[in-house]
Amino acid sequence: MNDNNTLLNAFSLERGGNYENEIKTYNYINRDNPNFIIAKLGSGRSNFRLEWFPTSLKDFSTVLSQVENKEAFYYKAKIHKISVEFIVQMIIFINPLTWMKELENK
Image (cartoon, rainbow, N blue to C red; front, side, top):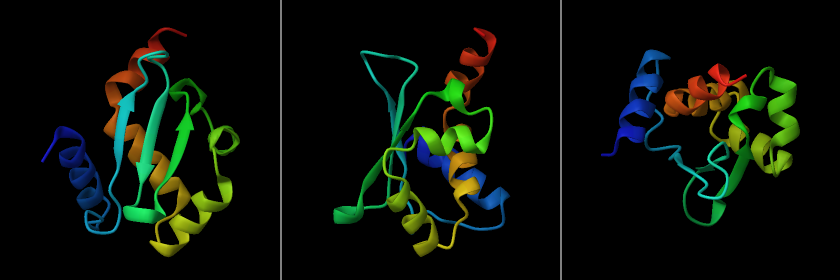
């Protein structure tokens, strides 16, 4: 189990649930732009990507404006009975160092 999955599980358990079997999240730093996080939710053919800059996570509406496929984003959240806010918080949590570094640079 990699560090991201460990953090994801810790965050899920802290929230009172364990979503390991329902939602798998991977993120990496884009080599061309180290501020850009790409997160993949789900598994198999239902995968879609959410893309945004961590510096845009000042409020929820800003996050949604950066989401590549809003309909899939809401649809997936509804299927898993997880709020969109939870997914956003989870992705902030699994990359806290990048998030904090970007805040410090502002």
